[in-house]
Image (tube, rainbow, N blue to C red; front, side, top):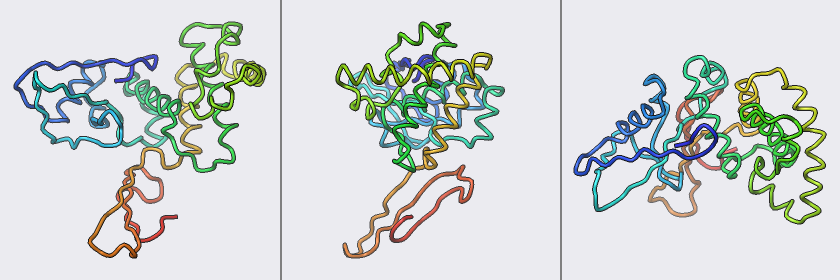
Length: 248
């Protein structure tokens, strides 16, 4: 589970011999995180690779002989209108969603619509995140200038700034943007900065939170593939969309 500062928390269940539903474990985790049961339905258990999900009714045996690990995640990212209300409904749930999105951003799990704006956009998000960190940790502008920008940008961007000179160049490029963003958000709340961060990710990653499945058949390999897309909060085509052939 994501902690309040992107640190991991763990719910350890040792009721050996007892079988749980995946949904039941989600509710137990939400309770430990002191969130309201109202938001528990937004969560699901994912395998550590984050490539597969547990159905809500999957039976999970708690066994002393076999340790099983899962990640608690928001499965389908709510629309902007709902995310904007989350701080008032459940502030801890909102912060959890922010930490999940930030974790996906840092670890390159977000696919962007337009690669041509990627580098500039990634660095811009890193600056916003530094300002958010400063407010949460009570670090002033001078302190933020001394932080390593590498801790706020994705792994894919870090490889462009490996050499000493490149690291210095990154810090020099960050400084004027950091000064400007710090002044812009100086009187703003942490929540509003987090909302800006989330919105900036969603703006260039329109399919973030959508799941795509390839449907296999017994038809010959020359046939067009069938793809199913699941995105219940899509603004244009919410729900399940099935495409035959190339998906645009």
